[in-house]
Image (cartoon, rainbow, N blue to C red; front, side):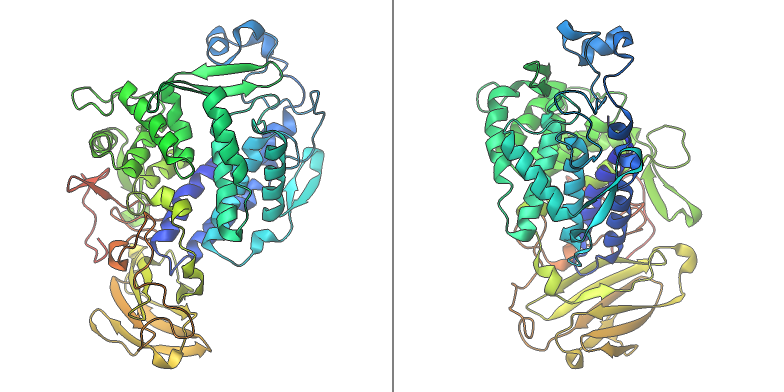
Length: 524
């Protein structure tokens, strides 16, 4: 199912939202990326399974025995559709031409709603709260808004506490956990209470879909539940990794139980055992991300070392300005889904993924903001406000090395008093700027590594706005100084952004990509 084109879109959005939290005063590039992902999610190709897999699978009597044994109810083999076959049109639901409005197809609308939440978290321009069209069956189109999709999902979930289904007739805890995050983000942004349905569902899941063994272990987890057949298709506890990543911001205790059981069962947490994984590296990547989120240094170090040795990290592209993991697939470009998940293990501080939901930075929308950056020629690896000092800190670099030294400009908007602005660049006073609006200045710069301090207030706190506390809210909880959040788009190895990833540390060493030395950079 993860081969469906839309999963390239949804899984690419997670690290984008995390990176936007690293440079809260510069987000425009992330808005553009998320818009591109969302625009594609409205097309026929995003919903191709729902729009073309009509009725029962005509091949279901001929499934290979090994696949049937793995995925199907034993007593229904030959009379049951393989997971991934949507079966749009079967009874009791009938044909649903709208992939959003359907009573099922949760794995379309649930992840779509989560992506829309990320977009609204990065920008408040309200674009996706206005009507847009979604491609439907046989050339039809249907008008939706972010708020409308969220409200529909909440209504459908309330009507069916066990959760809406994905394919007809399967309910997946994996998909529902992701859909819950979309409701949570919408509540965060609007003050709503739609996420309450998820808390009720978790209690049902603990009774029906998760084989809890005491308070800290899991014996099995449901891949899917068929309410018509009243059948739970069970998998071993290691399958809980896929649910844990989405459960983490919503029920940390349960997420930790799922994670801990899986890594202990596989042996990743045991220094005496060899690290092993499936041919598909996805599950090890999830373990890597979760180990960092939970602060499990032993598992993190082991999986980081494995990924460094086996996932083929390398620079590529003109000027070797881009970075990715090639996974020994002998392909010219890095795989999108796998690289997007790997970037989650490197973007921002530990806890950055859960922090998007548990410690969201909403104050950024009213603070001085960098705009009009000529990316990908010029990159920004730090951009955040120190509200107590009245200071915007910006670090730049040559994102495209061939453009180093070229002239460029960018703007800073939402300044409380342009007359109070004083700029220093690389430690000296900097006069190459001008006022271009009531709250906006424009700065001339060359494409190069620079450290700018833009002082916009001589007093304490934001003139005309409340003082928000001295340093930017860190995504991992608490507060982190701006200087600790130095990553940005297009950065060579050592920084995070489109086509690249930053590196964290494990016991003082760089990981996962610590074996590759990046070019010199003041942002490192």
